[in-house]
Image 1 (cartoon, rainbow, N blue to C red):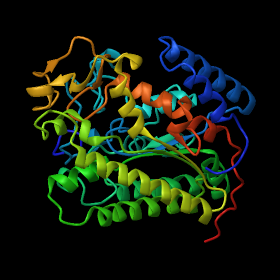
Image 2: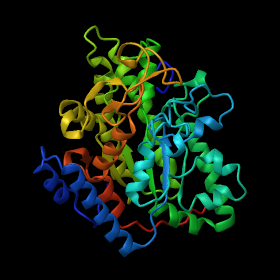
Image 3: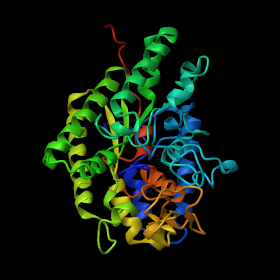
Length: 395
């Protein structure tokens, strides 16, 4: 939790065909290069055939926040200070909890965007910013936030419900000028990415909730359902869901284990949530006509990177690259923190968050990894599916 306590049918490129190639090369040192080349080729062919890159709308937490919290006056979950951003162009701390770019940036790149969509609050502050920004996409993610309003409520962050209010404001701002038919056509072709849920789990344990785990997960899923149904009603059809990672393995949670191993109660919670989220998306696919989705199993991706670190070019899968104390997990990544020599060989940048290198590999797996990482399809296949026609709302 940042720096606190914490598809449907359709044609396109087959995910199984590309992933079978990758699985034949599990221990080949050049595999990452092969993946990149194949992905780039797919993108070139796709954009040559279909034209403009779809807009990207991002909702979630610090895994995909590109600066929202720096624009919130009362927010205490921030990363706009060194050593964050040390590998970003000009070594600028941008508000990303990373040494450089984060998952949202790499998802945007893999889609074909040159730049990651800007935060809603930034666009809102610019003349015609929302109307111009909508064509390429908007980022609503807020570090420290969760699916539930209570998560991070004392830190001045924007929970998913507030992010959804921002999207609705964007919808009416843009449709008032361009018309609902134009906007819903845009949204039906757009890619809606969710990366959220980890902070709810952190919050649950930090506050010693007595609510049974299955009931708490149910509350989280209800908020997720509401968000998907609202976006769907406004024209959205393509949803890329980033699953919750093994949160008990982040450096600060390893400190809860005497052996400094992963804190398994949190991991069990994460697996339960992911499983139930998949069931929810399956239900929604039968309830909402033409909805298309891809679930990225980041939990398994992360476990694999820890199990086979050399394959992913990692040397340290336990400690943070930047921080203080044991595992660099007893203090924030700030200007006085210890910083590892090679920022690319750590899975974790700080006590909670992935390094730029880990985020880049995660995004690549979301788009072109083994088929078991994408359920029922991967992000690339989802993007290549034909967008359904959306009837204009009349209410």
